[in-house]
Image 1: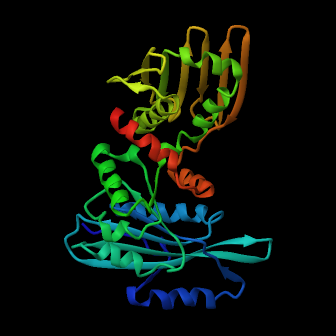
Image 2: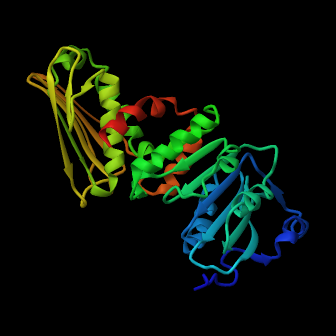
Length: 345
């Protein structure tokens, strides 16, 4: 069954061969608008009904990140070869006067797809700009070298995967094939950014540092849908602490202390709700209530107590993407933690 895109939902319907001409018309029609672009941002989904939601997401993203957006929906269930295209621009007022606009080109592809994804995507990019590629959903067979070999940054969300181990193997292999050129960003990792900052900040305390070698318990609570987020956070703790994995969720510290990990799933709570590191004389916790935009951070070591708050990570994937684009970076810590995470996985 063909996917039905309502008229105007993705902008002006155009023929593929006339895309550049139609984009030019957008700017000729409005002298008060200025075209801005710092990157190519390509969003790919094999759930074509997601195209309209992705277009809405781009409206918010372009307020802070000027780009040429290319949205691709691949309808692999429809055997009839076809390609539909739309163009539009998202404009935001600058200094109360001139509009700053970002172009968006959308495609809906169906039928035999070998080579069509790559050819469609790269034929309509600004060639001088970096390419950020957000792959939504499972990593399918269309993720191949002639596609990922041209990416500057690959964004994905492992929490949405049914088969995370197999998908990570594909991404690791892709990085090796491209010599590490492609920066990889898992939104499951991004979800714990402020949790990691908070834990690290609490252990700047000299009292916590002295008690750290005696830690023997880790408690972690998250939504069951955030399993990879939780395991990535646990892998980060183990990697930073230099703990050895002993199987299941048990570690051994550098001092030979056995460390037990307790994982609790709470679907009514925040995506990541709690991380506590405990020893006989120390308890360090970072927690978050569902819907709260702040983290509660606490340290208790006898009479020495610290209680502070700090920002929490975004919950919506599009907001996580925007946060990551603002921070940039090569994401080297994620790559360092990844082998430990794959062991736990």
